[in-house]
Image 1 (tube, rainbow over the protein chains, first blue to last red):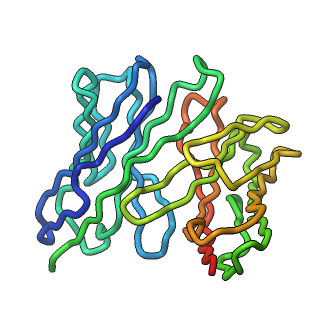
Image 2 (tube, one colour; image 1 turned 180 degrees about the vertical axis):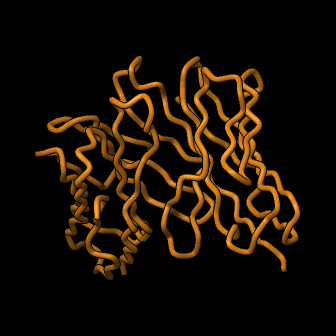
Length: 118
Length: 115
């Protein structure tokens, strides 16, 4: 079974600085998807960035980028020029490449609470 | 507005009572999921459904049941609520037939307190 681990329960960053959130996962599959979701105090789940395992290039979305290391099964999120609105819980998630499986599950890590200091 | 609707938003429930959390999506997604969110544990999968008429067990299925009579609805039932089922429940959906839009879309959550 796949598992997702986030070893940093809490992180803080100074406004305008850069922070990296860690995520590791365990799987025997070769094709899959990885995601970072943001959950602000409103409880809404917001997709931040997605990475397809078959792509070697790291995904980037504006100030958000990932460092995807497939062999190490690592998927970290870097937030540049941190803003007050980035304060939230961040979840790393794994999804199998559904075309090759008979099931469809999205597995989440325990989350990292990010604080942004003005 | 397209998306996922959960009801109720919050509920206080007496232990031993039966409760159904409702979830409806209008995006015609084939896959739907129920998660519970607890501090320090993240989102844990309770049940899922790949298509109407089929369901599967997730990580923490005990005490919960689901049905998928059609594409749009995926209710979660607690047959006899216990205090350990106090949590925030999220319904989500995705289109697993799509190679491009692979993420899950979430409802606003239901905060359930069992007393």
